Length: 434
Image (cartoon, rainbow, N blue to C red):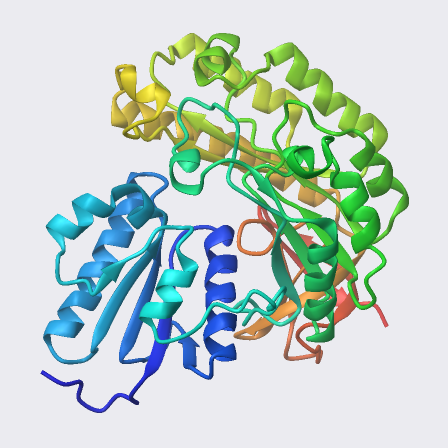
């Protein structure tokens, strides 16, 4: 059956999962556009490419459901072809081919040239930094490395993304310059592990040198660091953060747990003592820094005592930003050999308890901001509010600043100085300082 009324040969790219996938979709779309293809992101098209996530059970379920949704549309004649790429098909291609055989073709995370060929396009090596960004115009992700060499017991990312591979500094600078030329003001540096950047290329941890080069790019106002591994963190990065205004006083450093026995089983290469010392060094060197972390509860063999150690530590550390997830038992990971022995309801109860504590901490920290002024970037207009962020907040995961749009006009993508007049646990309300 042919498609009904859709524009022919329009390729719709659908992105699931993390910011790394957003980046990969943007690269794919840039390549397709360079080959003269009509390409859109999550709009109508008669050819569909689904960029899947395979990280944890919920993400896998969403990916499978999305594939099934588009297979139904294909059966109904609403789309002609469906291609699947990304982490789920990297990890489970034989299973998917068996269970959902009507997909036109499956591709893994490193098979971009093959996917482009299937879509009638050529892979162009010379397109360094040419992407069709899908984020709001003022910020973009900059993926500085692919893959991961860490041995974390619970994580399937090395199975899907391979070994760590840094992108050369000069290529990243070119990409940043192109983004800036298109109006991007904020770069969000991402990788499975920023801490490891450069070890493969330069035989040393070279994130600081990369930052020294990126701050020179005209038009970029903010550079934000996401996903730094605590073990082996290059402390020279803090020196640049301290003295270079373009580097946001912000660090996303997933710590996962703090009980020594759980950290050891997780193969994190650190201890409670070392982690606490590292965080205190961060605070001493850059007192104004906002630290975001993520934690896992319900890991195999996590006792009530382990959980209480984590809970009490969260109370003591008073993280500005924190997310908590329940453990997901993933095939072919080291932890899969352990018994998934913490009941789901206990996992949820523990995660909720951590988030309740964090909500109170966040509320208290936000109360201290009332009356203060902050530089805020305006991301969007939502109802009667302009919605923006301070340098201490990353898009989609952190606090937002709301400014009354009925009495003030602000331009999205621009910066404004905002005075905080009211604060909730995760949102600030402000007015423009004239």
